Image (cartoon, rainbow, N blue to C red; front, side, top):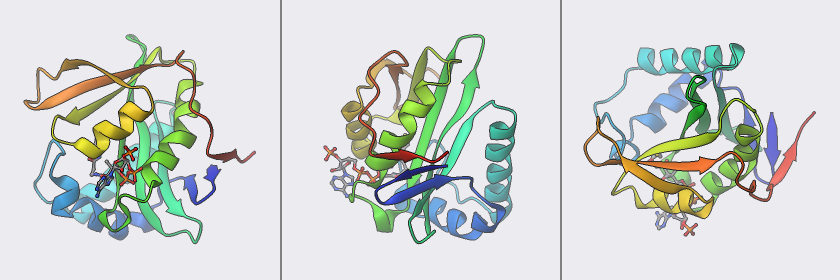
Length: 176
Ligand SMILES: CC(C)(COP(=O)(O)OP(=O)(O)OC[C@H]1O[C@@H](n2cnc3c(N)ncnc32)[C@H](O)[C@@H]1OP(=O)(O)O)[C@@H](O)C(=O)NCCC(=O)NCCS
């Protein structure tokens, strides 16, 4: 678990499924994601299971993003690690009601040093749509730079940060 001034980053729980599903199905949240079709509750439940299974197997590190009152507002994770090529892919999402209040910045500021410190990745990548200005601004703020466009997904770019890059200043503390 990680804690910042305004957030708790911990495991996404089965009981989060309805809130997370509602956040993920907001058309404005989906607009720059690879798939825009609505997601069912079962699909979101499957996503939660996969995130936690990846955590258990040390094949990923995924967090729920909660306000201090425990309300789920999104998630952030190093959700796919490619051990042979030594890079991992991050993803993040904040519910629209909570946009533009610095929550993604705070969550990335807390989790990025942890992702960087794992030791199994030389770089962290993010796949972002070229029109996703908020996400691009966020990644640039943490030192990510574009390395290529995605060959598989038209309109998407790949951005990277070396794990040896200086970790951002922590915005909170890591609980023991
Ligand atoms: C991208 C996303 C995670 C940003 O979350 P957030 O909590 O609103 O981000 P922050 O408040 O930390 O702001 C990040 C940057 O975006 C800007 N921003 C965010 N929302 C904005 C808005 N509604 N209007 C203007 N700027 C906005 C902020 O000003 C900030 O830029 P700055 O550092 O230059 O000031 C959120 O918009 C989201 O979940 N989008 C849908 C899913 C998605 O695109 N995920 C990323 C896939 S790669």
